[in-house]
Amino acid sequence: MIGSRIAAVGHYQPARVLTNEDLAGMVDTSDAWITSRVGIRTRHIAGPDEPVDELAAHAAAKALAAAGRTPDEIDLVLVATSTAIDRSPNMAARVAARLGMPGPAVMDLNVVCAGFTHALATADHSVRAGGASRVLVVGADKMSEVADWTDRSTCVLVGDGAGAAVVEACAPGEEAGIGPVLWGSVPEMAHAVRIEGTPPRFAQEGQSVYRWAATRLPVIARQACEKAGLTPEDLAGVVLHQANLRIIEPLARRLGAVNAVVARDVTESGNTSAASIPLAFSKLVERGAVSSGDPVLLFGFGGNLSYAGQVVRCP
Image (cartoon, rainbow, N blue to C red):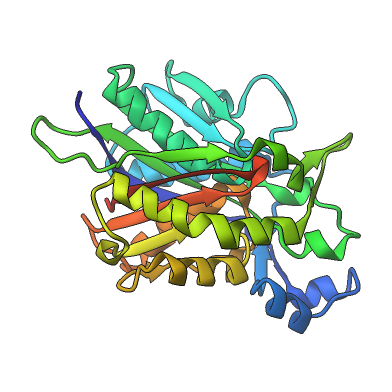
């Protein structure tokens, strides 16, 4: 089976920036309270006329342009999102229509914060099995639409955005650029992160998530490196789900990726759920913090207490 690689990435965020000071005028909070607990300073918020598929299409268009590909060259579109309000048409179909794609297969994946890494693994598997040769993978969420803006414990966390990757089949004899995925979940703790109700609202048991992330995830992340035949010391970059700086920094230290650049986009973007990993990864690539061919661990975790991680080579 021929492996796959990431040809290019792209990202998009809405223009409106909501600061901690802005939030302090909305709920009982402060910049000091927010930064000390989660490390977030700002987040981008989409307007009512900016649906999820528009955010996704902007990021996708940038990734396609960076890859030098046209929309008609894509044969599978995967969109990871948990904030699709309508059940049909799905987000992947809407993105394909916005980009003028003639007839790709279109699928949404809802694994919340681990959605992008699940979708990336699905793209890799599709290429390896011969079901696709070129895949557009997008993580996009509009968390502001499911936030309870009267709950200071959750509304300070969320932001909106999208990130995308173009995944292509490797040339014969070329080393695979997407490593084996390590994925799983803790079904009995799925209640710890929820988007439920009518209208749907985001809620979580913060301490439960924090304890699980701090104790379980370093071992799982190291196993993802082992599946790629690497050690954490080999990594040039680490992009964890951008949930909370107090989770990201200790997890990166316990992983032992001493030579890696660690993405900290949460400070300026907040928790963008499925968008957080591709958004942060695209920013690292854009500013040259990681170089083409560098090994980078992408590791998503959160909603459903699901996780998925793989080592990829930078485009």
